[in-house]
Length: 369
Image 1 (cartoon, one colour):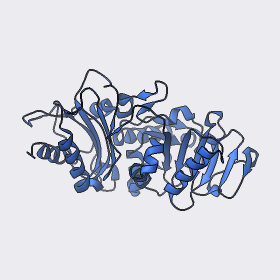
Image 2 (cartoon, one colour; image 1 turned 30 degrees about the vertical axis):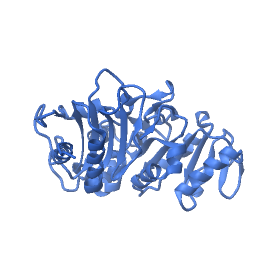
Image 3 (cartoon, helix red, strand yellow; image 1 turned 60 degrees about the vertical axis):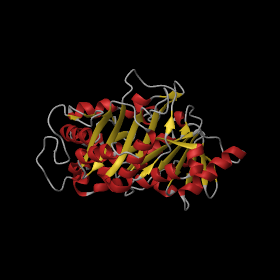
Image 4 (cartoon, helix red, strand yellow; image 1 turned 90 degrees about the horizontal axis):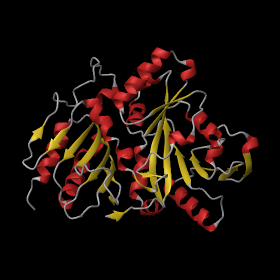
C-alpha cells in the first residue's frame, strides 16, 4: 500500500467526448487561455485541432509550443512511451516545463483503457496522477447519441466534469432534458455550459483527490458521496451481523428513474449507488473482496471510488479507485474528511444490480481465512 500524502506527481486530465461534440473547439479555446500556461496536451493528430498559427512559437515533428507556454504533442504509438518521454524531457530541460497534462481521446474512444494505463504502469503511477475525466456532450444531438451509441453514455457516466456544448444553437427545453438525463446518469459530475467552446480551465481541472489549494487530500470533494444519496433517497449499510438496512424503496438495476423503459436507452443499463460499512474492515478481506468483484464483474463495473476504515491502520483512512477490472494502487491519506469514520464505496455499474454487488462483498467479508 502506498502513502500518498503529497501531490507531487503531475495531474492528468482525460478529455473525451463523442464525435462532433465540440471537443476540438473546446480544446483549441483552452489552449489560448492564459491559465493554461505550463500545461502539456497530448492529442491524436494536430490536424484535428484548430491551432492558430499565430499562437505557435516553434514546432518540430513531435511537439509545438504555444506563445502562452502550453506544450502540445501528438500520440505516436504507445501512450505510456509518450508520457514517459514527456516526463524525461521535462526533467532534462529538453522541453518547456509543464505542471499539468491533458490527454485528448478520439471521439469513439472508451476512456477506460487510458485510465487502465495510468493505473497499471508503474512509471506513470510514480510520476503522474489522475486528476479527472472531462467529457464533452453535444446538447443538440445528445439524446439521439445516448440512445444509439453506448460509448457516448459511458463517456458521460465515468466523467468528473461534463461540458455541454452547442447550447447557443439548442432549444432551452432540449437543454433542460439533456441536463436531466445527465444528472440521472452521473449525479456527481458538475455540468458546465460552453458556448462556442468557452469555459474556464479552473472549472475543468482539479477534480481529483488532491486539492491544490490546501495541498492535501480532499476526499469529500472527490467522492461526492452525497450526490448518489440524494439521487436515490437511500443507501445500504452493512452491519456486523450482515443485516441490510434499506432506506426507502428497494432499488436495483431494473429501475429506470421515472421514465418508461426503452431498450434503446443505453443509460437505462447504467446505475450508480453508494455502500457503507459501519465497522472497521480487515485489509486482507476487503482488498480480496474488491479484487474478486473486479475480476468476476469487471465488465459491468465502470468505476469505483471509496474511502476505507481499516482495522490494522490506526487513524489513517485508505483511498481506493478502480475502473472496471483495474485498481489504482491504494493510498493512505493523513486524515478523515469528517468525524464519520465509516467506510464507503461509490459504484457506477452497467447491467448489474446493487444487491448482487453487495451480496458478493458481504459473502467474501464473512468468510473465515
